[in-house]
Image (cartoon, rainbow, N blue to C red; front, side, top):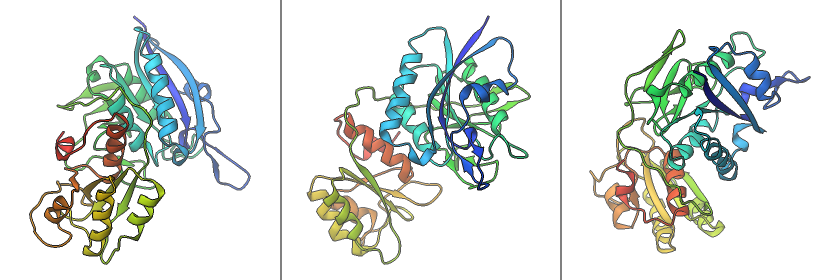
Length: 322
């Protein structure tokens, strides 16, 4: 029986070509050209949808929404076993989590890319794409939501991060492990997410920004973002969720202005939590009306806040318990 996989291409290194300068032109190769070079089982049928030819840092919420629309349209076909989205790696983890929160289907959405172009020695283009198609067509992965497939591993969209700028082992999940592997063309699933959240009633997505906290930081950036119209601000604090005390007046003003402010941690693992009580601590931030962001990193917290605001839903610390 044929298994049908839709492949949506959006550009990135996986679809790049070298130009006269010796640098790469991102998104220059079509999906048909890529798929033609993949060795796949005969029982898998591929449908190519060339959506964008963009570097991944050119993909924002508007483009993510268009990718989502195509995915939902493809899933209207009951014969589609799963979907693969090819994407540049720099913002891949953000698009993956956006889709994980906004696509409600048991079938799997796989996001993949590459660290090397199709024309470089040791390119990971074809292994990543072939493995992603196998994962998307594999019923054992159903119920996992959106996943990232890279370097023969399957990662949960919520926790995956790009951890290396150039190495083929570009993505990892600290503290949670990967969901499975692809070994010699066989998909092996070891675990799945316990809790899944999906928000389908999304309206206009508001402006949500990230502010990195560091020693001696002041609140000038926060003031500017509020003036610029930010509806949400993610503070990337340190440790258990601490920020510079010099930021507190601006943080309080932002909360008073109606901006949703969430604090996360720059640590690779662990949750923000009110352990200390001093100016700029997590407890102090809570008194100011800041929401604790659990174990979310700043990028994933930004995606979630934007979607919750777009869904007209209340946001509090319980929003980051899952």
